Image (cartoon, rainbow, N blue to C red):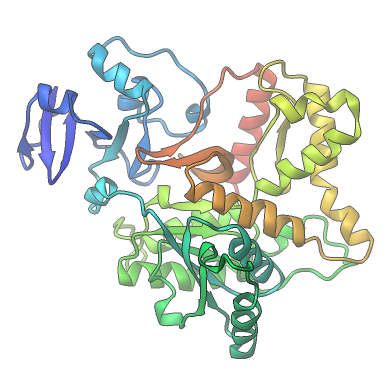
Length: 411
């Protein structure tokens, strides 16, 4: 094993990287806080950095669905390294990214969040952040309509907690040029949603082509200024749009990927939270599905391809498929009443999930898993993005494969 010091950070690796200042095992072993395992892997299919969940992840370059499946620790590493992984103190860093040293930077204590587009979703999401965002220092508001932007600056600025105003994040308008002067950029723009009563069966996928065109602009803007924060995708379809941001921001003017854009682990889709909320809503209504509230989880995209697992402890395929169907069709029930179902998604997938993310709590989000962005339970930690692992039931594993392959066919 080789050991290094970069600034105030300590790293270790299998191969020798002679361009780094050498350190020693004792120093790295006794360093408090995160230590970094440095390796090289294909940047097209792997993240720039992530929290190691087992020693097998230190050298296994496969970052697809295997991220979700628990594997036995390798005994080919010193016991102290296995203990540090168990304590959550090891971050894997991919040296094939030109900006790999950015993975050594700490998380912000208070987050600055800028929101692009203040339609139904963006404005509702902003309300949630204003009311509940104690870890947010400021909320920046941007919309192509100056009147809409000014309206929400006034509306949100006039939401006040009596005698405790300092506990709420500040709100201000930002220019398009300053959109990426923040710790998290939240993309809520949409070219258009099929009207209520239309015959479109999957509303989200109908939005992909138009919304990719819009998000391309912001991906290139982020690249041009060297944005180092998190790019949060709220607009539908969340998972393919995340992949589009990764590709577009990491491609030069000739379309060649040089990986000088946003790190893939800093692009997160916020669409799955409401699917968990909808599954819980229906599980509350039927006693036989109650185990979901205690043991269930959701995986996959926000829409077609969604997977609801009634239990991660005692998985029942029939119940899971039934609950999945109820959950996927929940938005259609609202549309059948003549309304656009945007309130629950804006708050459950948006505000509440974003707040959980910046607080270091678990939330449902889409992250890069090899070829695709796919939703699961995740969290942002000092040691990087954490994707929990499970002993997957064979039938659940097969459903995950089908969804994964379906996402691969999109982009």
